[in-house]
Image 1: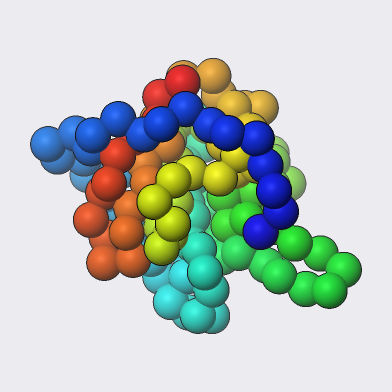
Image 2: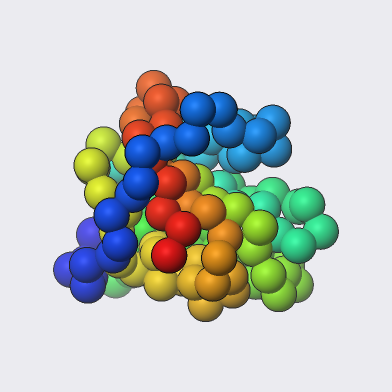
Length: 125
């Protein structure tokens, strides 16, 4: 993935995610596993619609999973995000994905989860 600026550190994960945020974890894991990608992500828009994506690494195009999930939401007409999840082997949230979510929501939680679905932390800044 491209180099990106540092993002706020994820706070320890909440004791339990809401059912809707738990669904995002499942969708993100599925997107990642389907194509064997480095990352999977899912977002929920202001109407409760969900969008899932996997990272893309082509010679001419590189997108994080979170960037692609946000782009899919915007392309479908979303104007605000309620929550986001990224499933990754990395221990931190990438700056480009963080920025894409913040373009649509200054306060939406971004949950960072391990490939097994364990939520490692949540970025709220």
